[in-house]
Image 1 (tube, helix red, strand yellow):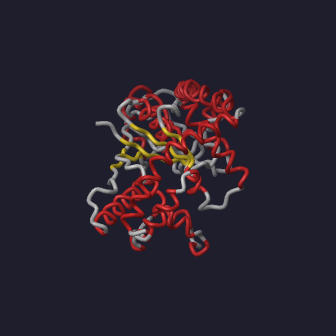
Image 2 (tube, rainbow, N blue to C red; image 1 turned 180 degrees about the vertical axis):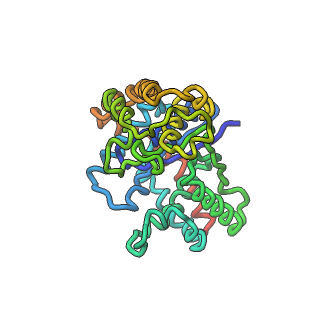
Image 3 (tube, rainbow, N blue to C red; image 1 turned 45 degrees about the horizontal axis):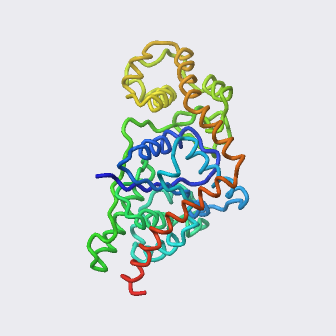
Length: 333
């Protein structure tokens, strides 16, 4: 039986290789499987947990849609929409926040990381973000949710909320308890300047990441300058624990080729980094340059992107509005 898949991407703009290999490439594979029903949400409500420039946010929403489509997600086959266009998300989040428990939210490590030392100054939205994420998923009866390591805990919370709602209101299996979809053979993508830090758009150095809008020359130059050590390529997988930059570049190569890290280590064992970097740059140009060109082309026609979003909002709303009406009846509204 096919899966019902829900996934969301924040419209932070400037999506990079980490976003592509960590999420979007997987979305394309899920979208291409005819058995799956996929809903891809641009989670703009989540984005405003941290203050955004309104004009920039609008552009970032369009850029995220353009990136989905340029990467190979077909809006006719899957639903692509922005969260704020469907009122049920905010309504559902409030009702579910009355089911969720403070103790559960206090355990969320991501809030602690994002709020930093002065958590008193963090927005309530940043704190209750996982309850909105639960509403996003539960409104569509999603059976599976693609998650990375940083979101596993939030999906657990979503499962807890669904089970508690079902138990509290004696409506067995009314809210579908979703399963995680973990990518196989996937390496976490780290900075090209520091193998111990995640690749991030907030890094001040543009050389630390491959942006999905980079052209061929930018990609080649960034890989040439990517940090390595003075030794030849690692001979075995054990060496990678001590050589984080080599591990990252080999991980990127493996993820692009859908191959195992062991195979990539074997293929390049003992060779010079310059030989390997040439191969890696070729692979990246082959995969990323067409996406980059298509994103730029799509962004020239903003009204076309807005139409795709409007169509997606209509389709998503027809599902979510029915579910929220039923939730309201169950709680006694």
